[in-house]
Length: 420
Image (cartoon, rainbow, N blue to C red):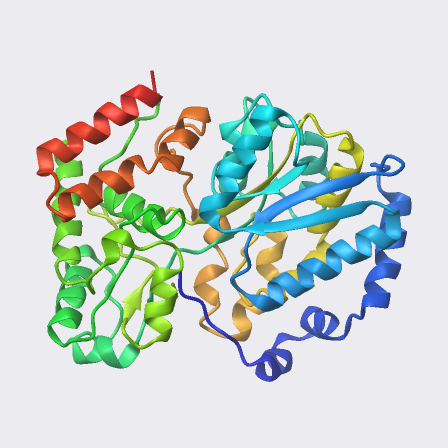
């Protein structure tokens, strides 16, 4: 996924109060806040607590620096030791699965999409933390609740979401005959075709890219009225609407830069920065569907605590501290628009209007669907996206491995094995 860098000086000039705090807050000030917070917090860490935390690797260096400062302040304020390890999107889930199966090795995992739903019986009830944060952060968005709750209980806390929008080079778009980014499916297809003809190709992942491929291919299916499952979690992927989505994506793929069928989540970054790529998935919303409605799967990042941890109070305290508004606002600003919280009060942060490029990302925490689409998030829905059921269906057709009917039938079989 392609990202961007803001001019920090212009951001400070236009951002105002909260942004100024973010720029001037020292490690000592953060530590002072952490100590006061720890004294008043309802969660008191266990003596000698040592937490092993796994998170996805950084895409924005400033975000990672801000996160490290938060960890450091919490450790010094509470005496808790936090060992942080970082893995790619693709590697977080397998490592979390190993820990869940053996019942040791990790205490907290900050992962992608529906990770807590893969191990609903292995995670700690986070309802008290979610309620605390909801009261301080202006309430949870509907998408946030869908990403965090199962049967009325919070099995994870959705930290933030990254908008899987479209990044494009304006000059190349205009040369392809479009003065502005298309808002409908036909216009988008025409733009992709024009970019290819001009030797300034687009490209979006069709390989096992947990973030990029899943996000835009779910959009493509939903935009044509297709769905993997219905509202009752019954598999309905084999349909005329899915067939139309497959044909549409194949038309785009034929104009893409070569090699997208094997791309991972870093491939388009490298191609875009190298000047080989002129449109990919993030700054404009993907076009509306055939019914005129916008449906997107953005990259939700939930955090979970395993129920076999020896230090549940320390883990809950850190999670609550991490998302507490007084220090989470500066972290959002450091992330430069990369992280859009599911807590509604954070949409007022000046980062979203300091630069117009940021504004489309402000509301993705409210508008994003979960990987379940029409259905309810569940262990099965989490398994379907982890197994790339939809991604493989599109890739198999686009690369010629299967025809439309076979691709849909294969996806249907895979899904029914999961949703049985």
